[in-house]
Image (cartoon, rainbow, N blue to C red; front, side):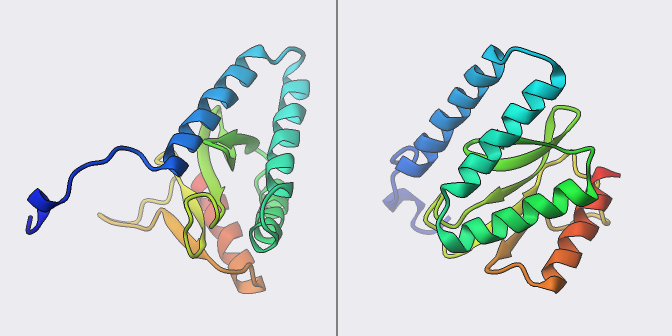
Length: 151
């Protein structure tokens, strides 16, 4: 790889370290949760909604719309935080997530899927999508992808 010897690995970025710390806190909080399954799920959703509310306006608007679309079209998915991002799990495993542009100082937000999503389409398929706004066409695509991912 040309120029590889000139670049030195300097470790994780501040944003990556913050995401890892958030994930550790999420795991600790989940382990301490008491109550019924429904109560735990309601608390996890409150955490997701609070995280969305803290986002910058453009990301918050998209995250709120995506949250509503997933709740309405994929009720089997459970909202939860994942590395400080709103995520939606199937049988305890994160299936999809919303990453705000601010999270890693990116120029766009991302809606992505993990390997439990059933999006396979030949030997190669997309698992993350850049978002700058959620239009009616984008909504349709998100709903189609989420339904297909759930299986």
